[in-house]
Length: 141
Image (cartoon, rainbow, N blue to C red; front, side, top):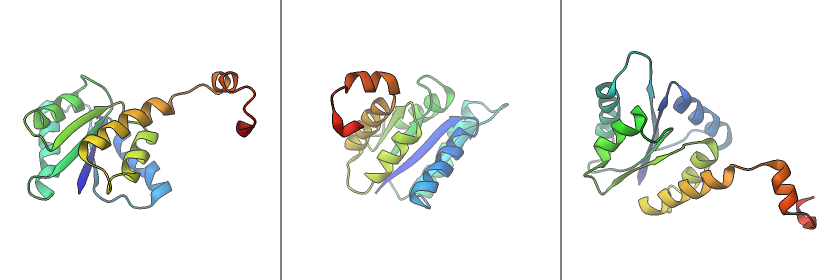
C-alpha cells in the first residue's frame, strides 16, 4: 500500500489531517511533519526519514507538501530524487488530501499523483463565476 506524508510550514499538515479525520475518521497510512521556527533542512530530512524508516521495507510514498521550492518540498525532494517508489506533489489542500486518501487503496503512485493534481485544480473556484458559466443548467439550482 502507498503511504502519504504531509509536509508543511508550521502545523498546517497536522491540522489538515485533523480536518480530514472529521470526515473519514482515523486516517491509516497517513503521516505528517511540521516545519517550525528554528528548524532547517536537515531537521526536515530527519523527520521524513524517521517516518520512512517505520514503514514497510522499500515503501511507496506520496509526499504532499505546501509550496514548490519551500523547505518541506526541498527536503522531500532529496529523498524522492532517486527513488521510483516515491513522488512529491505541491499545493496540498483539504480537497486534495480527501480525494487522494479515498483512492489510496485502489490506485498506483502515478494515478495518485494525477488525482492529487486534478482535485486541487478543481477545488479552486469562484461561486459567482461558476454560476455565470452554468446559467441555464437547472441541475445546479
